[in-house]
Length: 374
Image 1 (cartoon, rainbow, N blue to C red):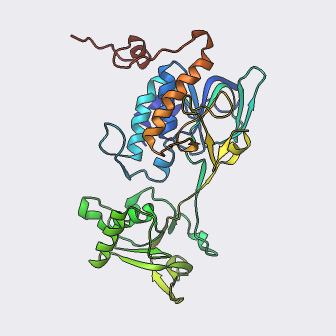
Image 2 (image 1 turned 135 degrees about the vertical axis):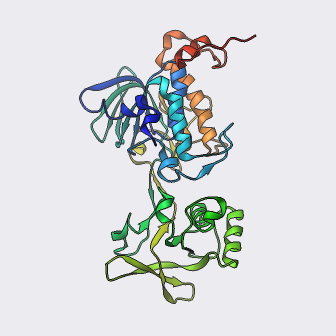
Image 3 (image 1 turned 60 degrees about the horizontal axis):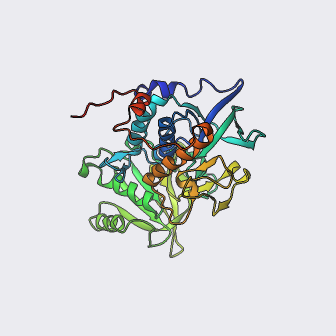
């Protein structure tokens, strides 16, 4: 992400950490797309927010795991990458002057006698806030790792659990391990490369999975088999049980034990392992909120948790009919913001809905001129 896109938002990220306690109307935990849009919905209601994220930059999983993968289901945006979605959201929330606190997680949430919440992070940043929004995706997430003794020495050099820069793998002999969408998507990406204008074509691609069955889109599986039949890539059934190194100490091959029990060495320049994520609620589990299957139970009127004043939006929440889609999270943000406004501005009574198309008040908040309609 280019910081020049939004200096006001990005440059305030660390400026206010440490020192005294920040008194604020809202704290948002999570700076993924849903957390960023929560800033927007609160901003329309003139509620300023502080945003906390464990990553060193905004974007959440979209940027951390899939920055270059296309997203097709954002309304009115035919296609964008996770990075482009994040950059556009940062532009959209620029008028609201959110303060970001990156590289830290919330450790403490305590309700005060006046109904507000005391919030503290791993860096000692402290807040007193009227409302708290949890937009932490699946929680603190970590890739499931390859369980081979000693192989961790190649982490980030030849062993990877995510792709941040596809160009780094162009022209290499790749061993991609896994049977889900991520493994299939990246295998197809690096194999088909130049055919679709993508300059990331690898020298060779071998897909390795423990069985001849996949938890991936059927179209991706069919395409992978077509490429194997055309000798454009290779699929092997087996598991990595060891590794070989060259004279320079670098990883030179993976020892793969097949379904027949025979172990063979598969030469490789780099291994990409996609075993999925291990979601961990972490400290959220200790905040006294109702939890179901590692997700926070909410009502669908306010998206409030079991503790009044604490809201949960995006993949972190669960309710009947829940769909884990970014657009669903955006909808949840709007209703949660209106519910929060009743807490932040109790003297205003009912908060009436206004439209950004026609409301002079919202135009002022957004810093735009009101249009003149014939």
